[in-house]
Image 1 (spheres, rainbow, N blue to C red):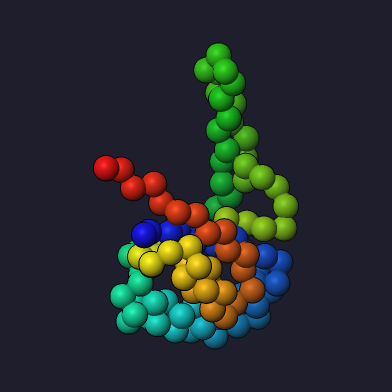
Image 2 (spheres, rainbow, N blue to C red; image 1 turned 30 degrees about the vertical axis):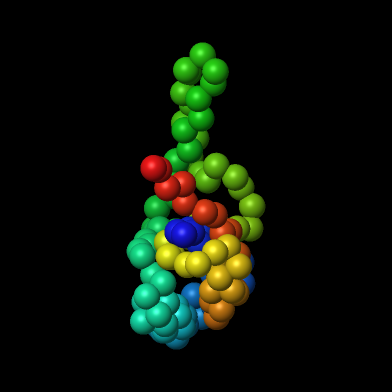
Amino acid sequence: MKYALVIFETDESRRRIQADRDAYRAEYQNWIGKLAAAGKLVGGDALDTEHASPATVRKTADGVASVTDGPAHAGEETLGGWFVLEVADRAEAVELAKSLPTPETIEIRPLLESA
C-alpha cells in the first residue's frame, strides 16, 4: 500500500532550521536514506516555505473564485512537503513517520489507487 507522509513545519522545526540548516538537513537526509535503503521510499518533495508565500484559491458553489495571499489554513504549522512510501499497512507508515528525527507534524494518508 502507498501512503503519503504530509510534512508540516512547526515553530520548533523552523527554529532548528534557522539555527543550523546543515545539521538539520543531514538529519533529514539520513532518515530519507534509511527509507530508500529499506525500499520504502517512492518519492517526495519539499516546498519552498522561506522565499515565497503561498496563494490560496477558493471557489464558491456557483464557480466564483477568490484568491488570497497566504496558506489555506493559518496557524503555527506550515505545509512543508511530502513523502510517498510503499508499506505493508497503515501501522508501518505510522512507525516510519514516528522515526523522523526532527520536530515536524506528520499527517499520514493512504493514496487512492485506482483499479
